[in-house]
Length: 232
Ligand code: IPE
Ligand code: IPE
Ligand code: MG
Image (cartoon, rainbow, N blue to C red):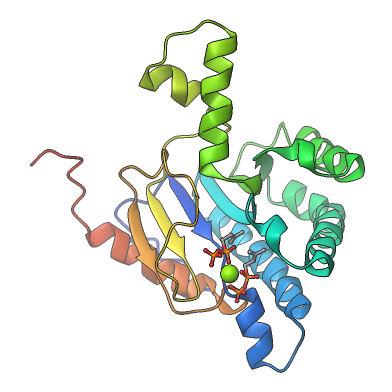
């Protein structure tokens, strides 16, 4: 593992669209499910690395509002994988002082999975290092609709500040660096509001093969970019 201490400034918030699990597995002659398994271990490696180098927020797209359209068996596998993931990761979160948070509409999940997610949030709530956020049954459009509804229900003015504080992501700063793996160059309904001024980075690497070295290279590239936010 390479930790580059000479980096001038780290992105505070990194968001990743973890894509390419299925294609990686197919290329290895394996079932798509093997790609999801390997992808879960990449989540662990990247999370530990981000916590070590001092990133504040790492938001990972794990299951979209559109992913319910996949074959039933794949969806069922992903739900079971999530249950197993949280059971095994609690120790890793605590060892690395990582706080876990979920965003997305969790009410669509089984009550068992919802409880595991809530328990993991509670048990890691006093961790003070990296916050790892998993986007679960997450879609930006769904999130914005739910936020505007909250404002409506509470009779609050519709303005940027109030929308921001009603989004699932209200506890975080905007995305600084948005990465998508697997060569697809699209956003797929991810953090549309929060990425308004994010620097984007697209890599061909499939998520199961994404490494901490590649992340370091992307962060170095991020540091060379001139972020103007509409100014000069
Ligand atoms: C990303 O990998 C994981 C999820 C969306 C759950 P994919 O499953 O989309 O893999 P590809 O894009 O089919 O290769
Ligand atoms: C986006 O990947 C969702 C996640 C990574 C969880 P998809 O594979 O679902 O996106 P599309 O269908 O290629 O846009
Ligand atoms: Mg995909």
